Length: 409
Image (cartoon, rainbow, N blue to C red):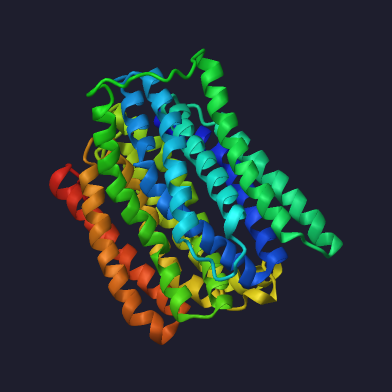
């Protein structure tokens, strides 16, 4: 199947999931307010960071080796389930003893329930979505995730309309659905393939190529995560709870704007592994041109219409969002272009290039955050993001030109 057709198919199914995510995010922001939603998202941010490390980026190894038919798929699936349970248990224990929540919502037994449910669910979702994606199946996991978001949206919307949101009940439902969706996606995969999970001894070396590749990808993924969210910790330290809530929504919008490229990258990675696309492909050239023109047009529209749109959807409690979003838009354009390069590097087995570029960019963003946020607040955080992603795009272009045959002409 042509790469362009796979991209459209991937986009169609993942659009349903991401549209439902946007709907849920706006509803959470309006129903809980800037401070409470900010604290909730900040907790998820901390949990997601530790989850990323605990995942060892196994999904990258799954996609790379399953796409190339170079790994025992059944053994890898069994290991994924076992590792999800073990890693979730370790992280939950660490959070129980060492995590401190200033809002005191996530503490005690509720902290254990939240961590264990979310971790197991997200691990299984991530790993088994990777199995589906490696076989060009983008339908199953995105349908499950999308309907899960819609259930949460309807629950919160009805409570908000009634004028009394039971915040703790919403949190319980959120984490419970996180667990159920992961179990369902994994269960569907095992059912479709006729596999059963067997507790068996894993022979040394049977999965070592997958694990080695995954650990290399982990360094880049951690750097990417910090690039997107390290400013959360700076803003939380230097700014008010309301500013944190506003800035997290700006960051989420920025991530939403690059979602088409995330979806595209999810298709490019396995296709690049199969040698169906390279930097010399006409498809690559067309993507760069379309993405650059499309995002420039979007930035112009946002400049003139952004403020009324923010007030309409998010409400007056988010009156600090507009200018940080405008300042961040150039960085979003640079990041969008970078997203075309990174999956091709990874698919060609050059994941180390992604790691080096991410680490250099991260160091620059941290330095800019130290300098700008104490003086300019969340607008300084937005400047730091744009500066960092400009450096990232330049590095990708230079390395692709020097090492992988990218021609400027």
